[in-house]
Amino acid sequence: MTLAVVLVLFFIKTYYAIYATHRFAPLLDIISNDLIKANDMEEEYQRLFDSHIKEGKVGEIAWLFIPVMMSIQFPFYAGLLMSIESIQTDDYERRMVHDMELIYVRDIQSEAPFFHCMFAYNCVQCVVLVPNFGLDGSFCIVTTHLRLKLKLITLKVEKAFNTSRNVYELRRKMREAIQDHQEAFEFYVKAQYMYGTWLLVVFMLTSFLISFSLYQIHLLQRIDPKYTSFMMVGVFHIYLPCYYVSTLTKVT
Image (tube, rainbow, N blue to C red; front, side, top):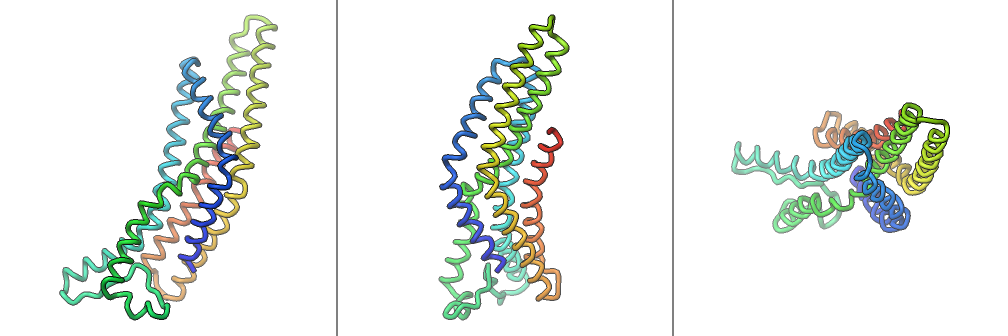
């Protein structure tokens, strides 16, 4: 069941990524246009852009790393055990990546070529499926960019009060800040429309994943490194979007 949750999450996310392309396109256009405008801004504004771009990249890379870790730990764990046993004895047991109790499979899962094909498949898919994780990482970029837009508005209002020479200049700058705030609100609405359903699905399925991992450990009556690490990565998988959202709410 633990692995079934991962498969369900993969298929739902793949479908949603295709279905929500028209929702993501406006967000990407806004981010691209803002980055182009940043080239003509003052150095103080550009420093804000640079710091938030780096934060968005960190989230993107982290969320690429998390699913890869969730996928690779099963073949890595099986390969590590076989490597250790092969050093200790010539008659070592072949460890299947996922033990299967299916008819016609459970009796041949340790025999060639079925064993080698399944082991190679599980190793290759850890890398091949990386593009599927781009939707997850884009959430970090979008929330970071929304936080950037709010900080830019705050800085613009502060500079308006500090540098305006008369009331007319102050009003003009405040109108610009209000317009920027409206654009930030529209960006927020688009982001919520894009990621609202996706966040709910990720939260529910990751919660199931953690629960099934704990149940598997309970059935084994011991702390199994494979399921323990799988559960810990699942916890981090759900923690990362919460962290980026919390940093956004602090700004608001």
